[in-house]
Image 1 (spheres, helix red, strand yellow):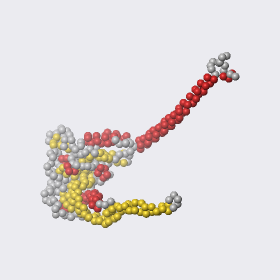
Image 2: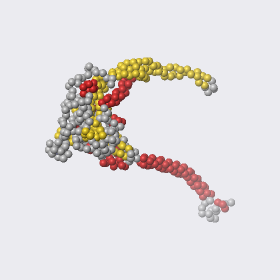
Image 3: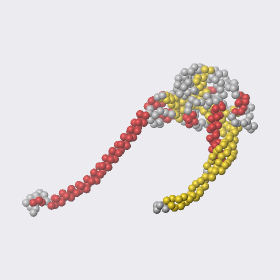
Image 4: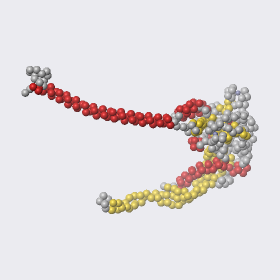
Length: 429
Ligand SMILES: [Zn+2]
Ligand SMILES: [Zn+2]
């Protein structure tokens, strides 16, 4: 990595050691009344006993979430990884590669991401850079299911099976791993600035008489001048999805997350929820973060260049005082197989925002298209019928009047009934 140590970077002396001694790995959260395992309840933000209803509040922490200095980490702490308390085993999904951290002595039978059966045997949890913070679930399952059902109901052309599935409401609550990076960036660029100007151009044209005429017109041209310069920008909380088990496209659509509200990590918040282990490491994650930052840096360079057009030929960025955090974000997930495809619906466990993929029912789409065609056809028929009868009526009226006029003329010419004083017209000499 191209970052260098910044003497101004905050000292990491006050930071807790990375491999902090947590509670023993088999620690659970027993109910103080009945001894059953307590689960985190998003609605009351407390540990809740599913058997006796006992609630144990989780007090807000006054401690700030600590970011780790990148250089400091690689110099002093790399390799000092640990496991998360209460998650002593892990299982890898053979289908999507997700590594699910299992609660002690709790087995998962299906992968929450792709609903494939977890065929692999659980193994001892691999050490990891422990989460520095998390956003606890704020939306309980019922609310997530409502959001999910609303979403499904608004999908057009979804197969009927999807609605049935929606009614089942099989949602898994998963804490999904992310990296966040902060970085001070200094960029040097070279390129060109394009300024538009108007020029008068002479051209010849053949007129209607076949004569060659010379005319002028205004054209816009660009004058390019070489430029170079420096921009600097502080990036805060650049969020990188640290797994490959879901398409990134969906994951990033779940934003915004309330990242400033990330809390100090405490295993209590995970109780009763699944937790995924990161499979995108710290370095790969930073590579992704850098790509994201580069897009914005190029935009800043272009702004700095000004003019009507900009070209960048070289952009060199130095990252200084990089810090990172491993954070867990809450997601309600519904994955299902329809046909031979896996579809996923993701609900942001903080905001209730829903994103997902869904199957289309080709039968419904075909029926819909046929119905539209039938309506158009019926409309054409009705209109042509109306037009025809309209023409017929318009022609009927004058003809009637003409017949009446003729009959009157006839009656005048031959009064009725015919008699000796009233001979038929034909008999009038
Ligand atoms: Zn209890
Ligand atoms: Zn899977």
